[in-house]
Length: 420
Image (cartoon, rainbow, N blue to C red; front, side):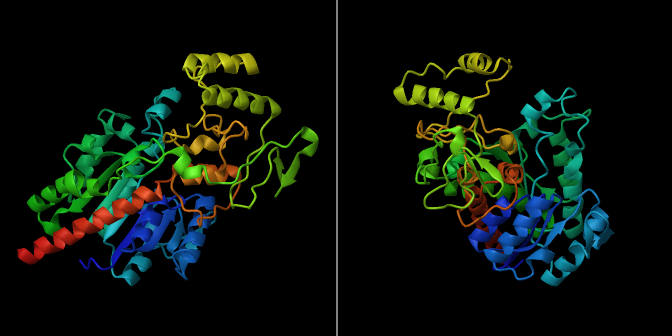
């Protein structure tokens, strides 16, 4: 394998958080990105074309259902997804695939998702989307794959066996070596400069024929113990590091001042100077009053509303409704953010801006900053689309370091092969 140009395809690509980090490293070429939702595909194509200068970006982004794996690879003509030659011609033109990256949607494996679902997500089709990922890996036999998912995958058991056992066994049967103890594959992204409390499982697999079975095991173990940890940062990043320099967005004085921007009702000022995607979503006067109470409580040091019970009681007092979980959370300037989730699009009440003068939840741009997307990634679509795809993404800051570590591993592997 030529380590100077590493061909990749991204499965379950979303808006391209993994892909963007791999591109930033400068070592990889994105041969194709597969995603089935419209909004992320549109954003992927724009990003590949405008930032990474792929003139044929539209043909590299394949909007299709990966569960229809044979058609994904050989082509399709479909009322919903249009017409495409599929992955085969793209990969043939590229001269093969070296690395496959990506990870199936995590909701079926997340502990929170299993708690919310009455059947513990056992009936969710997403439990077995890894099989589609595996079929693509088996077809193109890359030297390596990177499979990303939530730590909850370690305890998920939709059937008679833990899903992680099935996944490990399946990769082994396909000829790939993964870390024997995948608990050691759970990565804390704050250690890699992401200003957000986010942990993910990163499964690296190496094809045993590439370097030999014994050597592959040693290389995988070295990757987690030595190579990837070299990219850890010395000091964790905070909310202030990520978003404090953005222009403030302040409440309009009264409801008579409220206006519209691009069809959306505004309760806050627009940023001066203007920053794309940095527009506050509309907030009710009631919610702004709650935000003022909570942010001033923290800023003053009184801390009357920091416990879960106090926040639940406040929610009942203000809304007349009860909740089993506390609905409000104010970001702290001097700490990493709490997790940026896909369902941030619903209301944002667990991501309240810490400035008592602004009285709002975080914007799309602030969510993107906390996910380490650079400001030149402009997100297109509704608030539902943009918050959702940002929350689903792998932070590009970590993705870049992961990409560098995989490249280092390949260099080490190439050196070993020369010595054999």
